[in-house]
Image (cartoon, rainbow, N blue to C red; front, side, top):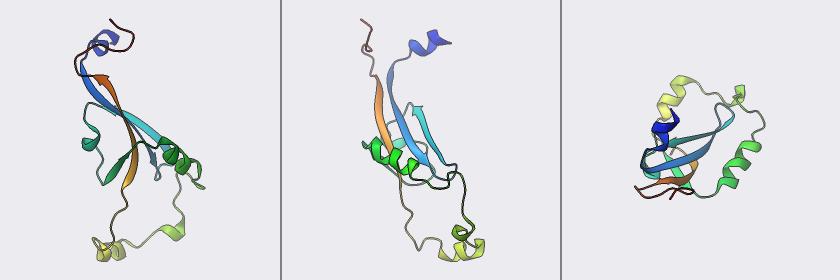
Amino acid sequence: MLGRASSSRGAATFYVWHDAQAGQLRCSTGSVPPEALPFGGPYTASDDLDAIVAEYLADESPGFVLWSDLEDVDHRAEQAGTEPEIPLSVWVSNVGDEGGTRPGRR
C-alpha cells in the first residue's frame, strides 16, 4: 500500500554490500541506524560505494566457491577464534527524515 508507506515518518538507512557467497551486489533499507544493521558478523560502514562495486565486478567466479578454497569442517573448528574475521564493507546512506518534510513535499 503506497499510502501507508508514504505517510511513515522517521529515518532509515539504505545500504549496499557485495555478497561474495552468492556472487551478488545486494541492497536493502532498514529503519535502524548504520551501526545496527542486521548482519550476523562484523561489518564496517563505508561511504565509498565505488570500492564495493569494484569488489563485485572483480569477482572472477561469482556465486562459486573453488574446491581449493574449501576447508575440512573439523580443521575449521580447530582454528575457530584464532583468525580474525574480516569485516564486511557496507555502503550506507541515511534516508527519510525525523518527522519533518521530505524532498518534493511542503
